[in-house]
Image (cartoon, one colour):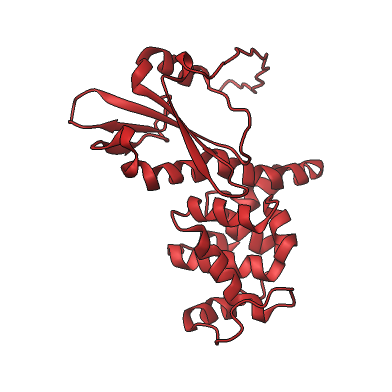
Length: 254
């Protein structure tokens, strides 16, 4: 789809999400795997590095144009830049529009649909929201507030999420000096289960007081966080779980 390959500025992405949620309402929420508008505002807002209220405001901007129970910003005309987006994308069907929104976070709807079994479709919808919460959204939440946290005051931040080093962020006060490692986890509700990979557990064991587990909770209502320094020696109780995985590959000789 040509739409997926386009590049969008952050504001245009926010506007498009607002248009999508206004036009497709609760059906649109379900297609992305969200249980409520509040959850969608929180998760998508933080994932985009913006305020959740921005998503809500853009949804309300378009509400007078669609037959839903909300009145939205009906006492003033649609802003010009929102009208431009509306005219260009108002005709997108649900599947195409949901795929466009997912593409903002690196999810290729077309590539997935080519290999996806039909019985997996419902599960894949819920997985999109879950993966945002446990990954990008929680990480962006941390990046947005870390400078206000006493534990990390005076530290510079390096994003290591793509380096596979066993933690998401490295913080230093002095170049070349000792660093703090922060692994970020996200939960939809106020409580829930979380796990450490073998590499994360290894780093937590080695770094001890310099390893932090930063857990963002309750994205479905109002997100808040807890910080666990040296998590393997605190009040958290981790239980080792072993699973057997069968890896299949196809070999050839050339």
